[in-house]
Length: 340
Image (tube, rainbow, N blue to C red; front, side, top):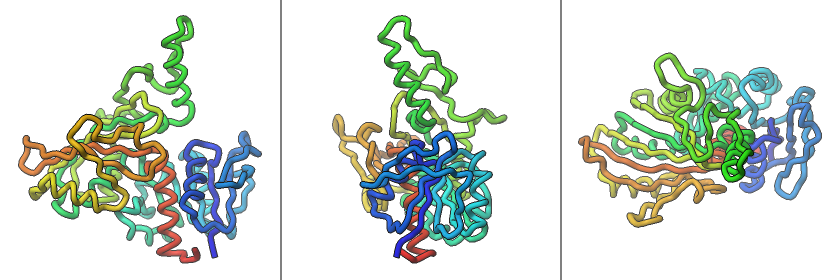
């Protein structure tokens, strides 16, 4: 016996990826519905070897459905998620709306699977920010061994994190560089993204952080340990898919780089590729389409007593969004609903 599953926002980048991953991982689906806004009504999307026609989110009755994977913005989620939850359908939400709600678990299944049992307070589970998701997969097994005091992270985030329009902007600006008179002015980003990097993701806060940087701090504390101190600089780079992070970690206890490498090799969701030679590391291009979070460049930080540096790369449309949501659905089914 399988589940009745709804994918909300099925025509977007993340929604389509959710459908792909549900099929790839052979999630036990008895029935599936693809929902979209009225402007996308009737659009066809793929689910394995099947073609689904999108239905109208505004008219959909969630009664009798087991779980809904939401891949729409916070404003729409604020309207529709409570409707689904009230109808008895567990919402797994990819927006930022519920991430900081004390009554909503924020889950990365490799890190805090036990939190899934808190779903019942609101019938909603939150999916973390893409940059946080891959980082905490790497931090948790190291934290269990040596206890992390402080993290300094710089991100290199692909444009797909901003949606299809951002991917189009990078593509069109890149082409325009080679055709005089066809230059493309930025509309998605405040500055040109082609052949450039932009140290600005989301809005600026009063203390000088951007909201993306604040999210990494708040979410790491909620998912891993509220005692961890973290500071982030989040940067948008001219890459279509795949986020990379340079992570500096300070521990309470000494952790040798070789032991850290062994711990990460054994940790769920991680693949270590760490050869000290040209090309002996993973880049965003290498990770596209993969489920894993890749760790490279593991090395001691000699400037502090108990420090390590590492390089972390993952497909942000997968582990950073759609894959993590499907993994939450698997966890929910396995630990709570127990139908599949």
